[in-house]
Length: 157
Image (cartoon, rainbow, N blue to C red; front, side, top):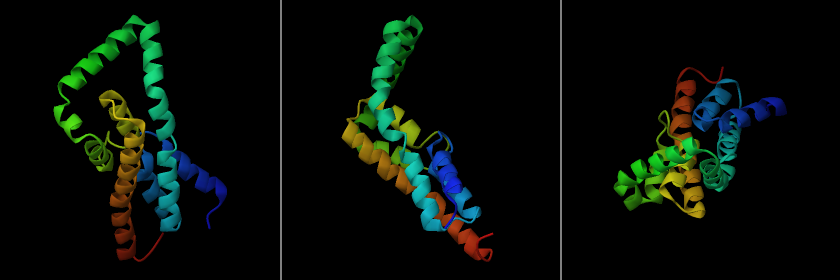
């Protein structure tokens, strides 16, 4: 068992945008965390901001738009541009959101998935399920090779 401060740091790293579980888990494994514990901590951290983001992106953007002409123009432009090019995303809905979050690539993940769900108007429950499943899938995609590499090299450092 790894100490609680180290575990907390992995959860917090997993919660960071652009870092997320896909980097927190391999880092935890390389620092000596048991793989299952690293996986659970990284995914938990990655999912930590999802509910607040899904709940508050719309009210915050509405408030900013109402108070600032610049924000209003930005969100008007964003929605017009996105919805004009969103036929495929809207056609596939939650499945597209899942695939977007599951791809362990830069600028994809739970944070970006929350923004996409907001912009495309995907309902909370559907977005939460798609983002959660995508996060777990991306975490598996990045964790399994790390386990293979560490096993090939003779175990954990």
